[in-house]
Structure formats: C-alpha cells, structure tokens
Length: 236
Image 1 (spheres, rainbow, N blue to C red):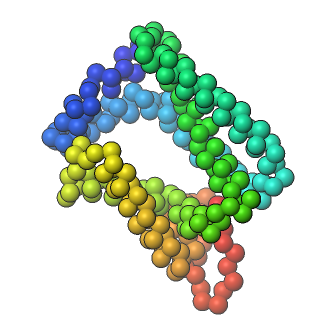
Image 2: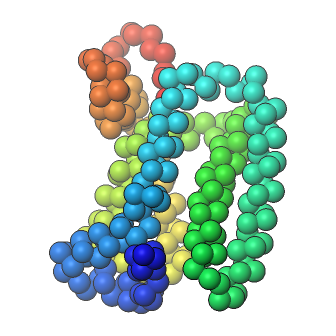
Image 3: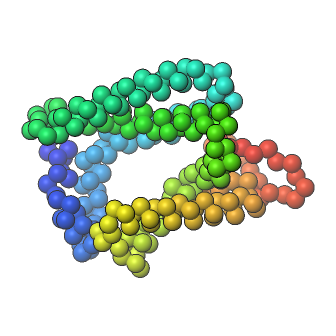
C-alpha cells in the first residue's frame, strides 16, 4: 500500500539526472507518470493545488484585497501563529531526519511539510502587504505588479524556458552549480518582468489571464488597451 509513496526514494540524485539526460522521451514520460502517481496522487498534491486556486478565485470575486486594512490585525495574528508552527516543524523535522523513522511518522512529516509550505507562502504575501501598508520599498516593489498581473502566463512561460535551457537546445540539466542555477533563475525572472511590463503597455491582461477570464465569465472581454480609454486596472 505504501510502496508508491517511496518510489522516488529508490533513485539517487545522479540516477535522476541520468534518467532526465539520457533516457528517451517515452521513458521520461513513464518516469514522470510514476512520479505523479506517487507524490501528486489524488489524496496528496493535486487536491491541494486545486483548493488553493479555488480559494484564490473566491477571494478575487469577493474583492478580498479591498478589505485588507480592516482585517489586517487578524492577518498579523495568523502570521505569528504561522511562524511558530514553521519553526517548530523545522526543529522536529531536522531532529527526525537524522534518525530512522517509521513509515507512519514519515507520512505525518510529509503532511506537516505541506502545511508548512502553504503557511510560508502566506508569510511571503503578508510581508509584502505589510511593507506596502508601511510605505516601505513601495517604488522597489511596484514593478512586481506587472509580473503578478500575468502570474498564470509567467508560470507557464517559466516552464517553457526551463525546458529550453535544461532539456532543449542548451541542455544544461544536472550540469550547473547551485550558484549558477540562482543566476539563471534571476535572469529568467528579470526577463519575465521586462516582458510583462512591455506586454501590459499594450494589453489589459496577459494572454492566459485573458483566456481564464473569458472562461470564468463566459462573455467577450476586450484584451487590448483602447487609446483614450480610462481603464480601471483589475489586479485579480
């Protein structure tokens, strides 16, 4: 019953690099399907992602962002509790990672790690909101709005860029140091930031965001910015 969960642990880092580098396309598809049936199976990753997307959609429709000032004290309490949880989890995870633990405890730690990751993402958003409300680094953070308004497009685009760099013409998979990977990540993000800024000078939404809105609202939505129009920027 637990065999699928341990699938990836049968492979070392070098073996995974070998698989992604030298195996055929169909063999890589087989490996990825096994990987997705392990950690991303129906009781694990996929429902979490769908739930987060759903909550984000509902928050947008409720215009949650307009109520931030009113509920910010409650968000601060949630942030403090999140920090406490994350530190406690990191401590226990570090302790148990040095020992041979039972499969049941291993599964519990993986579940708690998922919760910790979600709370950590919440803390990032909380910190950005706090700095914005305190007028700290507002001008510095402002360019991030362009990437945020095209988050779905950029999410898919970074996958395309990653395939091009690591599996496509350049083929750098498993060949770069951690520092080099950081450099690649920052260059990629900078290019997406520039591309988002250039795109949003002409269009109201990113291409994928436009498609998402058409599917969500079921009506025609104009993507182009019409000259002399006064457009209220929708940052959902």
